[in-house]
Image 1 (cartoon, one colour):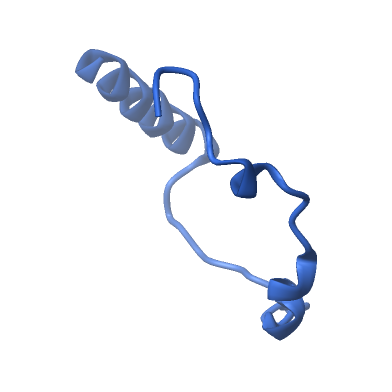
Image 2 (tube, helix red, strand yellow):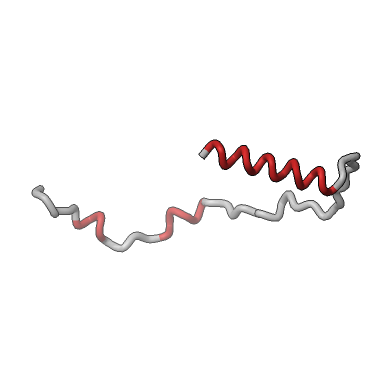
Length: 62
């Protein structure tokens, strides 16, 4: 086969029969409807400052 040639059998319409054995994925299988809480002695301003520092560190790596 030369450049630009192809096997015509590869170009025929493919059927979806191969997908019949595939099980569906349930993306909601591990959903959690509970609550999450935590306690911290740091103030909101301190946490925001720490977040800003982490973002600055990430920008320094780039």
